[in-house]
Length: 545
Picture 1: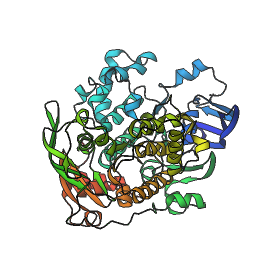
Picture 2 (picture 1 turned 30 degrees about the vertical axis):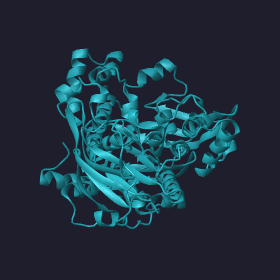
Picture 3 (picture 1 turned 180 degrees about the vertical axis):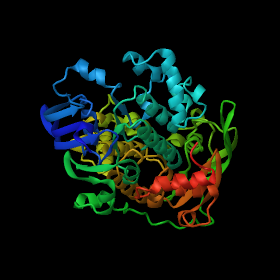
Picture 4 (picture 1 turned 90 degrees about the vertical axis):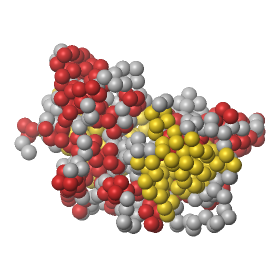
């Protein structure tokens, strides 16, 4: 590429974070060059500095961080020396950002179209009427349903995949030269991810937009990036074009990332004829208001076993969990615990019935109270369910931290903001264990974690299950996770169970057509995989809508 096409040049970037009144290095002398129309993939485990570098490309750092060295030039503009007003003028107009969680990034009180129009109007790029027309066109290009109408919905009225595409359209509103995509498909199911990846790639190519694509998913970055840079603890490990990096990584750390997840739980034998399930769903129908969402759903979960419930967004996985916990009373059918019917609503359940079923949530960032220290987060359910206080409460809280392999003296008085993503998820596990339940619902608990951290969480859950004879319902869209931890698999689509059985049977053909769709949608470490899949589906008339 010619020097004239150079868009972003970062040299010897150093970024520090404040901890215990001292500044600690986060990024340690990283270089990055990006040309117009080029996509750079940044990969590495949690804490590698990926998002920090992505934000620095906008001349921005999070609270508690500072750029302490190096230069950042965007199209000849020195972002370190530019005024804050100058940087603000670039953000949203010439440099845009797409966050990992669209649900947490949109304002829930405003319609999508209003939030789309905000940047073009504030940067005086177009009028409100022009912005609304442009929104419809970009919604259409992003393959959103009913593009003329969807903008007039609120964020909670569209699916996660649709919201992620709406965010990408919003980032394109001013036709920026550079977009930073920060894990934009991490929390999406595999079928929705295909739609979002295809839409992102199309719009980047159509507008010749440069992009930094941050992810821990190596198969995804293989589809999106022209070049890949590998990071570890703020240092650059290596960089190469995508095909070279996939075929012949040089460094041992890169090779370890390329390795397939090693943990795979030994499949437990089927329950004996006289063994009562811990939890049973019997012919469950459920609705949100007048809209039916579950139809005749039945499955069992036994002690010491993990049932993975899989399916795309809107299939009914989390709704089934809400029925089990009593948050959504079924319109018909029943939930049994140890063979006894549970009251349909949680208000009618005893404290002991509530104690027996706990949840670990997908997004630890939003599931933990940011104002409470770890001792309060874990100690509250201990006090509520077990009645402990004083020294006994302190001792039990410390025991739970030891169980999740975190040193009590180091963590008990920290706030969630002082923990990594994997550490936060471990605290969520400890909080669930605090009630001493027999059954735990794990709702996408590894989807926001990098491969190495996720493997550690799966091993921890496996150990705890064996130690305490726990029954798990594992809601996930990640079929690699299913292979790693499940004993049995329940496949759901549009509120119905379409297939269920032992894991060993479910991954062997023949499959139900929907199960086959899920399996075929898992990205492969092949740069041509997405093109090949889209071509096959287009030929079959099943390309993403």
